[in-house]
Image 1 (spheres, one colour):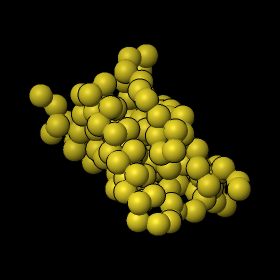
Image 2 (cartoon, helix red, strand yellow):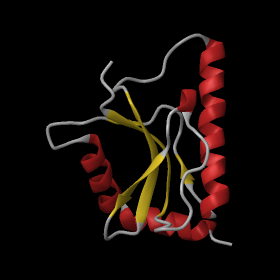
Image 3 (cartoon, helix red, strand yellow):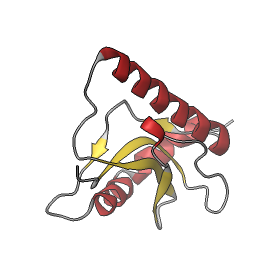
Length: 122
């Protein structure tokens, strides 16, 4: 299976050298931050196949719990995050790699996302 997409857990203010991902993602996937330089935002992600998670109900419940745990760990570390729903994937497209597309999306929606994150402070 090709691991060319990014599974997105949450968007947050870029912590710089501060708080980073803790723990693991779905099925133990290593978590990392994709930072959008110049806009102050980052996304908590793991590399994934470019297809949604599907399977028996028990697997889906386990994946959703892992998703929630990754979001909550990042919230505790960073102070506030905008969580994504389960199964949000950014796949590569004709306009570039998944990481490039995610960064562009963060920049394009930067004002709105920063405003929403600002409401979560304190």
